[in-house]
Length: 165
Ligand code: MN
Image (cartoon, rainbow, N blue to C red; front, side, top):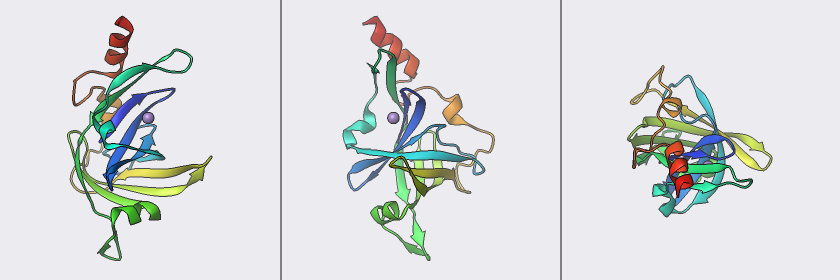
């Protein structure tokens, strides 16, 4: 699943259930279905499963509005292989290379996540669409689709509602 998070900087949070937790990456420009577009994905703390449906507005340090919507939801199949042999997801995660076949409302098909290094204590990964199902060469849904797949509301809608209370 994927959340759209208006924090100090707007980003998407890609979260994959592995061993009962939501393993998470912050993707500053969001996921792209174009295989020629590589997107930085910064590994963040695992979240518990309850966070998968969390949406809400809050006040950030300094008083600026913040909010989270559920931008995509669905299931996925873990598809990482090494030398033709399936690799368990926790091993792939530790090794820094993960292939997932998404079956979401907005994102579908195979995506690869590859760790490229560590900067300031944070793992830097690259998220890229692989050839196959779900390729959209000129689409940028992260930039064009602003609503929640659960409520139909945008981050700005949630922040306005919170301010009106
Ligand atoms: Mn976030």
